[in-house]
Length: 60
Length: 106
Image (cartoon, rainbow over the protein chains, first blue to last red):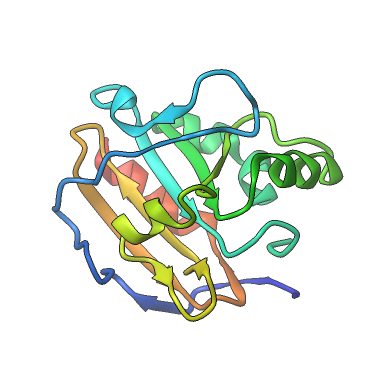
């Protein structure tokens, strides 16, 4: 699937979250190996840009 | 996803860490990253087992397709959600807009 850059935003909230809510914590394994990534480990340190994408081999 | 690798300096300037999440497995992430010449500056995370659990928590799960929406959520340093963009699935959101949001968080 070809993916082009664009500004077609579908929504600024999700079915469970809106701006201002506390982010749900999560822990997931990383392709770089080592410890799993835990969102709350970066609290007070970093802004996190969480990019959900449909599948590998698609967004080029 | 590779576009974030190229602009990592812009994200770092605003104390931001990018993470990519899909339902693919770690071996798939590794193979895909390798095919793109390597993704070293941010992690690809596997929402693989239980499949889509994190996407469900964030409300971006597409039950009919078994994948997540193309969407971006910015979590600020306090752990609050500062920005949400659920995007047209065939498009990659533009980084410039994200950088603006991050700048405003400073």
